[in-house]
Length: 323
Ligand SMILES: Nc1ncnc2c1ncn2[C@@H]1O[C@H](COP(=O)(O)OP(=O)(O)OP(=O)(O)O)[C@@H](O)[C@H]1O
Image 1 (cartoon, rainbow, N blue to C red):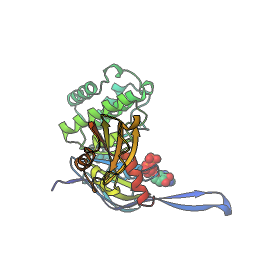
Image 2: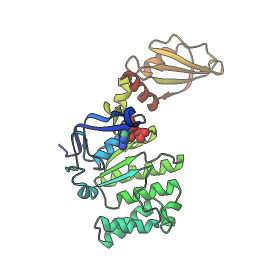
Image 3: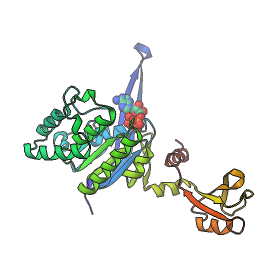
Image 4: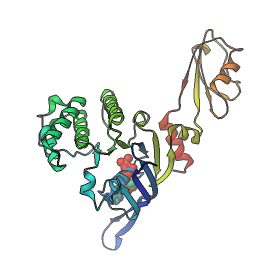
């Protein structure tokens, strides 16, 4: 069995929130993470999902040693993350999309030199890795620019290069594509896919962007109010909430609504019935069976299948969990 890179047992973190003054002073305990048990194997790619305030960042802070748990245990790369924070920093790379690990007033190149020194990289190794990452992430023209003058997309690429300079075993990305335009998101995803294929880096990713989940992860963990409510694959999640697929039929002639095909529900017709959309549950029937039932009734010119929208699937999971 491969060694677990992250291993959490009954992990919990409470925050005590005090408000008011004097006699009106109140004390409230927020269970940001509760009884979380999670194993992440070496080389895995995990999407860690949940609504705002579900406990994702708190979990990441415990995994990376920034926060101490109030319950349970956590090991990252075989270490106690908080106690062995310095040693762990050499084995992990972390990017918080909304916060910077770079020196705001220094040019990018100097941030990389400083990080190289912190990680104890030999000058030659640092140069080789910087050159490679700068080339792959297209950072060449900004190396002499102060970090505060970079655009968001340039800065995030700069942050990812910084997190990978020491070739970590685990890369933790908290909302890496937030605020990026479509093209920048896509380029970043391409880079991460290639990087993982070449280096086998374990990836833990929090995101609200379902394209990130689809492109970058193999397993998803969904949290709600600090509790794990799903741990499995995306198809497994779709099956769990019973989300429908939609067969989109383009017909040769206008056809009356196909509202009586077994196992389906007509969810739309357009252009006098030239295009009709039939929703079906993969558990109840298949696209082939639906097509077989349709062909005696209508001449099909073309067809496509729409997979369920993942955001909608996660929403359904929340509803079914009472969230
Ligand atoms: N330092 C803190 N003091 C008090 N409460 C906190 C603190 N940090 C987090 N919380 C609370 O813990 C809960 C979980 O917060 P966390 O930031 O982990 O959620 P999240 O899933 O990362 O949310 P988002 O998607 O908005 O980043 C929230 O209710 C939050 O208000």
